[in-house]
Image (cartoon, rainbow, N blue to C red; front, side, top):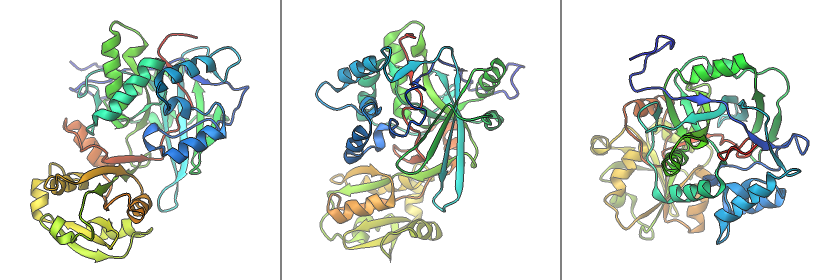
Length: 408
């Protein structure tokens, strides 16, 4: 039955969204968190990890992406030391929401803003009030499960999209932020702690009035569900730290995740490998114009040591693909190439570098899914292929943590 207190009725259910006691870098230690934040674990290269560790002794990459034979236990011990009196981390004195804003420039150089709220999103099976849109891979899930078991902390958030209207307006916070940072890509991160009872109620009721679509962090969501099942009973493990944004084109920038292929023969003929599913035509080497070329031609792009080609989907692959997505179309072609290994990588320049260095036989550039496609897939109860969407910019790990042990 629908609640009359909610503006819209959703038969699939709605989530809970509550304030929490944030664990944050102590204000007296630093208000500028540029030296201690890091990107999410799955986009950090080894050189980037080493650089982050060298930048500050309390950089949270040591928690987000721990190393060594006992890495999870070591991360838990380090977190415990950081939480001791006088350490770099301290809990806030009461439950709060945290408005978080990222300022950046999109691919065309236009200034953009993404604003949303960190809160505790109640955990429930997918397809009820929380709608995943992408399939996951087992390896990443095991890593994140081992980390949460050891640290009993939501180190980094999932990213949710609220289909309710009004959340963006609630993110217009007055005054200076409580914490700020600028990352290596020039993205400006700002955090405001929200404690006013009326604003807390407004944020909670807005997000809890409609389903939340998972944009990023599917592995962390599934891991949080598994961890909740392991713990049993009621407690902080019933929710996961989530950054929730109103689902609008103005708030979101979605990039594709491309594919690196190994196992193709040297100097292979693109027509013989992909011609059954795509119309192949040569094009210039990838550069800043490659996305526009792909968009104009309605094509994917194949990057190899001996050339670059546009690949326009044929009716055959359009009929066979599960979804109207480049990732689904490429999956159809790759199903006939069992000896080819596939890796995921964002950024056309990284694809080109990998092919040029010989670490991949070829790369395939994909066009991005749209916000409308993501919402439609989630509401239809379906899931896109793994690594289809890359939301930019990436949330900074370290602006706020959420402990699951009730320690203050």
